Length: 50
Image (cartoon, rainbow, N blue to C red; front, side):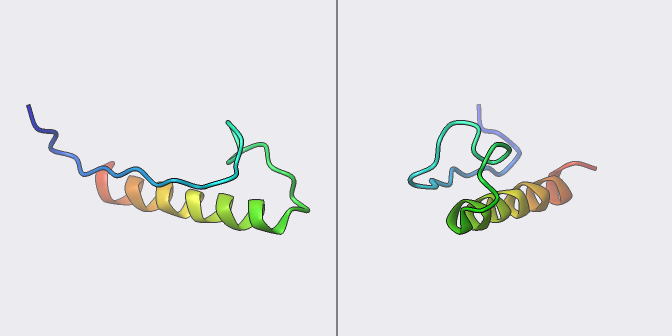
């Protein structure tokens, strides 16, 4: 059975489990990666959740 909702997996190297919510806000790389992940998530919701 094929899903009707598009999905993808994106790998963010060198991050720990739960990193999108529990990252050091003084770590520039972590802040950038979390911001990118949050934007990807919001884009997915805008496209698929109606």
